[in-house]
Image (cartoon, rainbow, N blue to C red; front, side, top):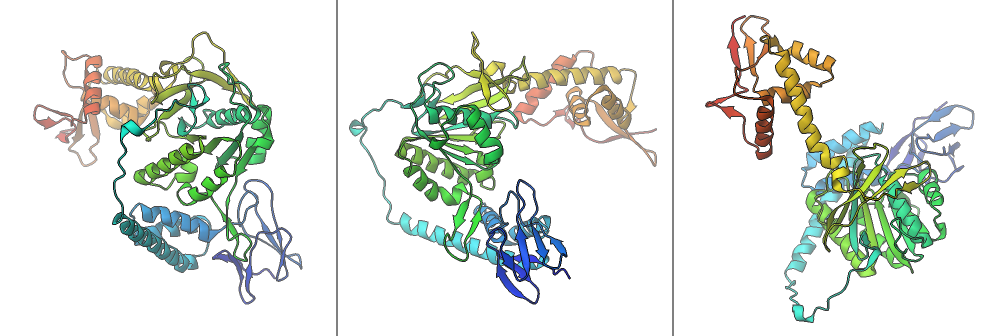
Length: 488
């Protein structure tokens, strides 16, 4: 007869039979049950009774045991650091518990985790306050500072001793790009622009989104990497060698000292790749994220390595010295433009273009290197402005014969290929009058204002300027979008 199982503080609990520690070892028998581990992402683990009755219980993915205590602790510390109240934190964690299908009785454990996280924060703040009483300014005379030339991993592209951010939307090939950089460093190959390579060096990869065997190793192999010079951090081992040993996700906020030790152990370390920033700092606030990046900068300076951080952000306002963007080419959707956004050492260098293939990327050799003007992100504002003008012209033509019900206009817009949000923006740009009939089932009606002296282009330009300045849309002392009523 199948028994009921659930997870509690990293232990597998069987009612009436006591607790058995789940170590995650394959083929270990637990009180008459055998643990069989599925392979691959999303596979389930099974607890199979000796008499043949099967009980399937999801315990983790990718062959790793779930660690509820570690997962909840990581989230609790992030929320506590952002100043979220205890009831809100507990409710957020319980929502996560329900999403995982864990029992409601874990509420007591959640409360304990939140309490510990708050106590740790209080202890850290007290220690910081104590140290502040003995701190003093460190003032250096600039006459004693010896100027140093910038050391480059890739000349004019990727410097040593600092953090470089490569950002862009999803599916732009950012991971393939940084793996190509890793392959060239590991083998000492030349750079895509023809400049001399840095010589064979060691690479450390911290990837929180892709499997090593399915993505990382095949792409490195396709790029002729020397895999003996490449190492990857998978997870963080807690309590190694003890009975309570377990593994959890790596966190840049908590585990930077361990990362520092690993970088220090590299004898010929030149490149550290963090892919992605959101995977390892997703729950951090802006101030905490700045602190993490500052520590990464110190780490890069101390060991003279280049730290390349990948981000899925659509824009980058992070406090780093070297920033690049990956985006689609305006004229060729299959071509990726790698263009500079910020370089604190001088003029922006030339960009490069590449295509993503099944196992590597192919760099393009072009007479004119791509610039920010050729990438899709740089032209998004112009495209949106042109689209808004087209939508406004369509709306003006549709309302030219008189007022129409709002639902009818939105339906016609959908048929024409415009979304409801796009039509509303066009309505705001044209200052369309929105009125409601006074009947019992009165409906909203849209009507054009009589503006013989205003063109669509002029109205759209004014609307965009108001939006940019954050000015409220007010005319003639009245809110143009105010509610008015008319008789049916």
